[in-house]
Length: 480
Image 1 (cartoon, rainbow, N blue to C red):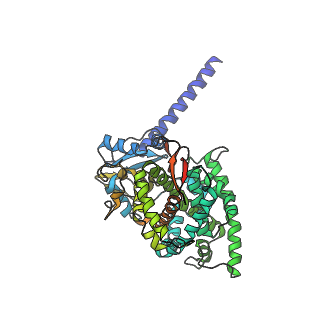
Image 2 (image 1 turned 180 degrees about the horizontal axis):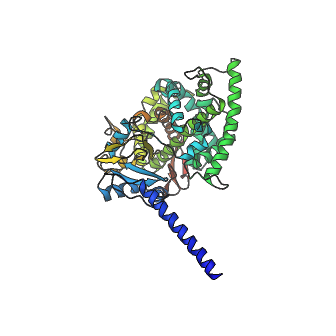
Image 3 (image 1 turned 30 degrees about the horizontal axis):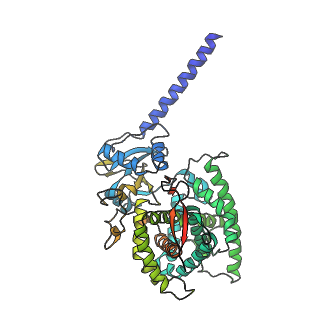
């Protein structure tokens, strides 16, 4: 009997040993080839993902990048992230290469969790769905079209501050900024303005957004499982909205050009077919995520830096009050007013340089190519990082110093300031984000000064930068 158990134990140990050897062999086989970039690949399956993510959780995502640039004396290095062989491209030259070779040498890549959350993408792929979306958006998100939205943005901002900021001594900024940008997105994309209607799926929406880029384990209690559950609830709500809009369009109660939802319902493909309702719901869901998540992070950090730098607040206040004092009572902001907010936008840009809402993004090599003398194999995932230029002294002297004058005149050199990405995949909502940020700045500074309640509040990246406690502030209303 003892011999039997000993033999069984030896078989188990041998099986585990062979399994581990296979994993190590398979892991290393992805990194074989001539003249690959320098770097390390970490453990099988995990790679360097934990270190990559943990530097963000600790508030210093650039450390992962700069430590390896220094160690390998190279602005491209190999690693293993999210279970994939990868190369990180750092610096302006790396940004330029990736952005200018979109759909030639590289294309967009999303973690598998994204395809699993959006059912319509399983019919094609998240990459194909993104291409379709980009064809739909330009006529709504180009500056000429957005001009007519500024008054609506200002009206919603005034209602938001009346509901959530006025007559309060203290507020927590990040959840309120999310509420504001979500309200705007619902109004401008779907013509929904009723706060009660919006609140019905606001919380599930935030659950979805926080669980989208996570390990795709669909078990109860995991962020990914909660994201799946939330997406199903929101999709059901959107389905009802879509059905009602179809009826309203047929009866002439809704305009074909009133928002993106109407346009999607009426749009046809090359064969004259309309999109189905699930497809439209997923696209609207994606727009809501992209239309509010990054802007809410930027707005929160603008409030943070204006609390920390009173002289900068005063200059923003002076600029905004000059605009406010030129308006008749009850008159809303317009395009000309926004164009006068030059210093305010320079401040917003400097905030996004130091705390970029978009930390970076992945591409996938669609063919073998050479960059900086190193071979990049087909199928490798490629990551560009905003911090690799935003916090580089080569691109921005004294990079930790807050200096809005960097954006005066011609501004930063090409491919160094990339909070919205670049090339064909530059965020199509860049101008939309500029307007909602400036409208928020106008409304907050003309009402309040404020100070931080937690002077040393930690910043975490998950996956965007956010203050760990949401940035609680004490409000000091201006006297009439």
